[in-house]
Length: 125
Image (cartoon, rainbow, N blue to C red):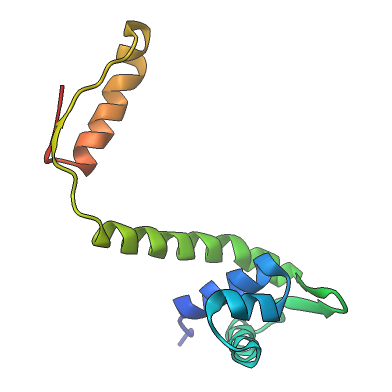
């Protein structure tokens, strides 16, 4: 059975990758440096490879870490977006739009269609 990746581990991985430093990532994540180190060791164990090259000036992603970072960022972003959408009250009420006629047919119909799907309680005129 394949191990499932924990979103908390991925969030910490992204913080380490972006700061290039376990201590700075720990400050950003509200954890101790040793907790971040333990999380990264656990993640490396789960993926079966080293994710960081440690050096005197911090850490850099290995080839395997580089393969993971894009997906990890998307997952963390999607989790944040989902949490924000669940916390936000749905939009409602009237909205009036003014736009030059040359954009009306090409852009406006697609944009309004997508908007009305996401916000069905908004009346657009």
